[in-house]
Amino acid sequence: MPSQLIVDYSKCTGCRICELACSAKHEGKFQPSLARLKIVRYDDLGLDIPNVCGPCETAPCVDICPVYAMRRDPISKMTYLDEDKCILCKSCVGICVNGVILLDTNKMRIIKCDHCGGDPECVKVCPTSAITYGPYTSISTIDRHSKIQRYLQEIERTDSAKGLSGAD
Image 1 (cartoon, rainbow, N blue to C red):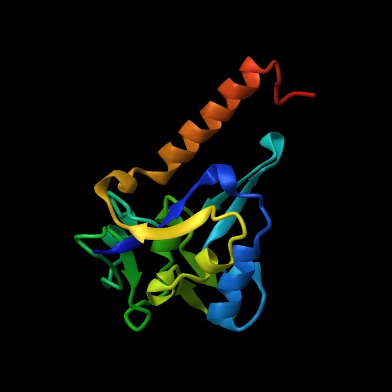
Image 2 (tube, rainbow, N blue to C red):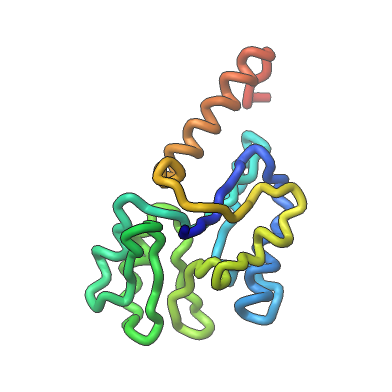
């Protein structure tokens, strides 16, 4: 059964070890800008959200690629990049709803998560298990933006119930 990265947003501390480990594994250096996942910081909420390439229901990066360098597995719904076919049009970078298809300007190539061939480095180093790797289920294919939105709304409700607010 196919596997995928699973994120528990409530466990992320924003340590960014996952970004460092990812860039070290793929590039041989600790450079978070070359990581295949991104930690998005919401300063006003004191919150960090791991943003990873996950199963997409729509996969616009596949549809927009003029040379079919991006493909989508019909079962896992994961997207994959064939670097040999890529012509660097950057359409996939602009359309990725998760912001995790990136242009490496040093080597002039597109980079994206490949799940480290089934043994994701980010999972191995995450000290809080905010990122795990597990079996694909259609339920987990829910749009990540919707998941994040619901999580942020839940935090707002909880803070409101405790008499807290984001404003100082």
